[in-house]
Length: 82
Image 1 (tube, rainbow, N blue to C red):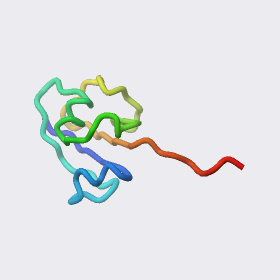
Image 2: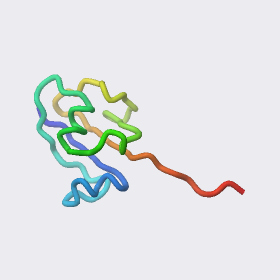
Image 3: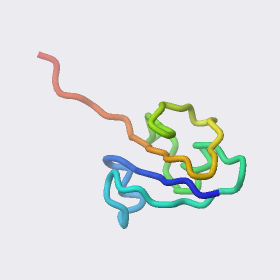
Image 4: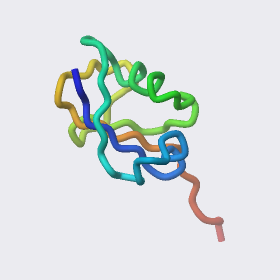
Protein backbone atom coordinates (compact mmCIF):
# COMPACT_ATOMS: atom_id res chain seq x y z
CA UNK A 1 0.00 0.00 0.00
CA UNK A 2 1.06 3.60 -0.49
CA UNK A 3 0.40 6.46 1.93
CA UNK A 4 1.05 10.13 1.26
CA UNK A 5 3.27 11.43 4.03
CA UNK A 6 4.04 14.98 5.19
CA UNK A 7 6.78 15.81 7.68
CA UNK A 8 6.78 19.11 9.54
CA UNK A 9 9.37 21.37 11.19
CA UNK A 10 12.57 19.64 12.32
CA UNK A 11 11.40 16.22 11.13
CA UNK A 12 12.32 17.22 7.58
CA UNK A 13 15.97 16.66 8.54
CA UNK A 14 15.30 12.93 8.15
CA UNK A 15 14.16 13.42 4.54
CA UNK A 16 15.70 16.71 3.37
CA UNK A 17 14.69 16.05 -0.24
CA UNK A 18 11.05 16.74 0.79
CA UNK A 19 10.33 20.29 2.06
CA UNK A 20 8.20 20.66 5.17
CA UNK A 21 4.54 19.96 4.53
CA UNK A 22 5.14 18.60 1.02
CA UNK A 23 3.56 15.17 0.57
CA UNK A 24 5.60 12.24 -0.67
CA UNK A 25 4.57 8.63 -1.21
CA UNK A 26 5.76 5.87 1.12
CA UNK A 27 5.17 2.23 0.33
CA UNK A 28 4.32 0.04 3.33
CA UNK A 29 3.20 -3.55 3.83
CA UNK A 30 -0.53 -4.09 4.32
CA UNK A 31 -1.71 -3.75 7.95
CA UNK A 32 1.06 -1.24 8.81
CA UNK A 33 0.52 1.33 11.56
CA UNK A 34 1.69 4.91 11.97
CA UNK A 35 4.52 3.59 14.14
CA UNK A 36 5.60 1.26 11.31
CA UNK A 37 5.67 4.28 8.98
CA UNK A 38 7.78 6.30 11.44
CA UNK A 39 10.20 3.40 11.83
CA UNK A 40 10.48 2.93 8.07
CA UNK A 41 11.29 6.64 7.73
CA UNK A 42 13.98 6.17 10.41
CA UNK A 43 12.56 8.91 12.60
CA UNK A 44 13.05 8.37 16.35
CA UNK A 45 9.57 7.88 17.82
CA UNK A 46 10.40 10.19 20.73
CA UNK A 47 10.87 13.01 18.20
CA UNK A 48 7.24 12.77 17.11
CA UNK A 49 4.40 14.40 19.01
CA UNK A 50 1.27 14.50 16.86
CA UNK A 51 0.23 12.26 14.02
CA UNK A 52 -2.71 12.92 11.74
CA UNK A 53 -4.37 10.57 9.28
CA UNK A 54 -6.73 12.21 6.81
CA UNK A 55 -6.76 15.37 8.99
CA UNK A 56 -7.70 13.56 12.23
CA UNK A 57 -5.35 13.03 15.18
CA UNK A 58 -4.53 9.34 15.50
CA UNK A 59 -2.37 7.28 17.91
CA UNK A 60 0.82 5.51 16.81
CA UNK A 61 -0.92 2.13 16.72
CA UNK A 62 -3.54 3.37 14.24
CA UNK A 63 -3.76 1.02 11.22
CA UNK A 64 -3.13 2.70 7.89
CA UNK A 65 -4.94 2.05 4.62
CA UNK A 66 -3.85 2.51 1.03
CA UNK A 67 -4.21 6.16 0.03
CA UNK A 68 -4.19 7.58 3.56
CA UNK A 69 -2.67 11.04 4.04
CA UNK A 70 -0.39 11.12 7.08
CA UNK A 71 1.07 14.20 8.78
CA UNK A 72 3.79 13.84 11.41
CA UNK A 73 4.69 16.71 13.77
CA UNK A 74 7.51 17.01 16.32
CA UNK A 75 7.06 18.37 19.85
CA UNK A 76 6.85 22.16 19.75
CA UNK A 77 7.91 24.59 22.45
CA UNK A 78 6.35 28.02 22.84
CA UNK A 79 7.65 31.36 23.98
CA UNK A 80 8.56 32.54 27.45
CA UNK A 81 6.10 33.04 30.26
CA UNK A 82 5.79 36.69 31.33
